[in-house]
Image 1 (cartoon, rainbow, N blue to C red):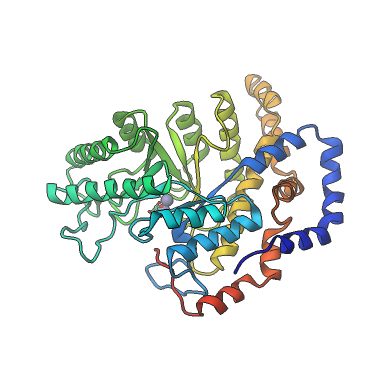
Image 2 (tube, helix red, strand yellow):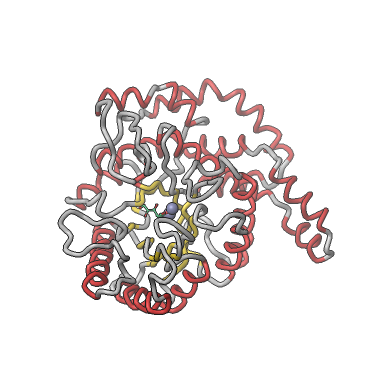
Length: 424
Ligand code: AOS
Ligand code: ZN
Ligand code: ZN
């Protein structure tokens, strides 16, 4: 299924009058509108290759039909998203679920869709059929050096795939830890993990980054060896300047103040990027902004502030990725919603009167500080995001156009009703 420029143009033409009416307030009254639109046009969010199929839980999986059967079809799906919103111009691959057997051809295909390759992800949380060693008791932390070596080699192999595709970062998420008190020597697990990570770090090309993702629980439920931002930060500091912490919004203990974590990591120059999603209880991997949109806005407020304080490029200096997948929605619709929620939070954060906020803070005026933040959060910035899309050649309303074109039905027609994408 190829989205034609006429589809976008026809749809936008029909919506244009209504859109311009809503936008006129912004263009006439808000001096900041234009720079916000420009920033939104540049901002791109990577789509994970494992989110293009219906996600599962350990209780079951209910594929929705028309799911991509190959890496080529996954790229086509991300291309479709990007054509609709012009904000999903990157794909984050997972090895070995998506091994590019012919990297040149894959790179060319991605380029045809205007996509680049974001961070590549390794997998040492599952045993592969031909693997000699098992990760049942961990990978980089394992007591047996042969298991650690297999996991190190795999990560180096993932870097090699990434280099061939033009990626420039490796995300390491470890399921390593323990399920029962007494099972693991924490200090030995830490040292072994660090020395394994050092070997991976040594294999990074000069311009690459290593993202160390942390997670408080699951699949190990007593201890996780990279369990919180503190341990990730420690590993990243010990590894060196190419290592950073990656924040997955679902990986904290309940009620953690993620915006504060983000502020400190960015301030210390160790924030590498994000896995955006939302949750009510745990690592629920729900659509970004679907449960706690205010939290997402507060995170972006810290990001805008911290990036500007360091003179960093909002669009390029961090890894912006989605990590969401679940059972009930069409995955492509879900991803369109996630990207939009991220853009809205970003636009609202750009709207915050930061000078006034700083004054209120210095004066210990908590009431005024809250008013300033909520003033931005309660502003409907949808016309700004739509305008950024229109100018970038995207649909004014990607989700509405996706439904109008009946994209899923077309994909089912092309690929069949019973396809299952590789992934979680
Ligand atoms: C797992 O909980 C982490 O969020 C990972 O980032 C990711 O979901 C996994 O590596 C899939 O590749
Ligand atoms: Zn993640
Ligand atoms: Zn996760």
